[in-house]
Each structure stands twice: as C-alpha cells, then as structure tokens.
Length: 100
Image (cartoon, rainbow, N blue to C red; front, side, top):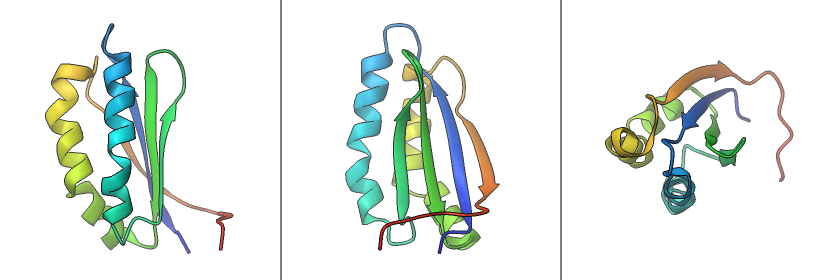
C-alpha cells in the first residue's frame, strides 16, 4: 500500500511546452525501472502547467526516487525548460484505490 507521495508542479517557459511534455513522457521507462515507485503519473494541467504525482510505500522509497535518475534529469533540464524551479511537495496518502 502506498503511504507517502510527491506532488510536483512544473511551469514551462513560453515556447517550451512541447519539450516539457516530451521530457515527461520520456521519463516513463525510468519510472518503470524503479521498484520502489509503484505509482507514477505525468500530468498536464493546462497549456504550460505540468506536474508529476508519484506514490511510495514509505519514505525510503520516496527518498530513493528523489535521488534517482528522473529527479536528476529534471533538475538538469529545469533552467532550460521551466519558468521557475519545480515545486516539490512531500505529502501523505490518506487513502488510495489501485489496481491489483
């Protein structure tokens, strides 16, 4: 069961919206490789607003993800693609419905 999560808000620079979307889509294979990341979503809220929501069984998994390849790639690309630094919130999951 997932108990903790990350909610990340991303705002693309003008003209970089398609690149942010492509970056997020390209991160799925990396998320699939993370055994401690059972839930991962890349989101589009509006024309230039994007996000990531991922959930974990415990804080160890969450911290491993924060130190992983997706986070490193995002922080490396942030100055080029994002209008501001990613807003990363560590949240608790109160209830969840997952397949399986």
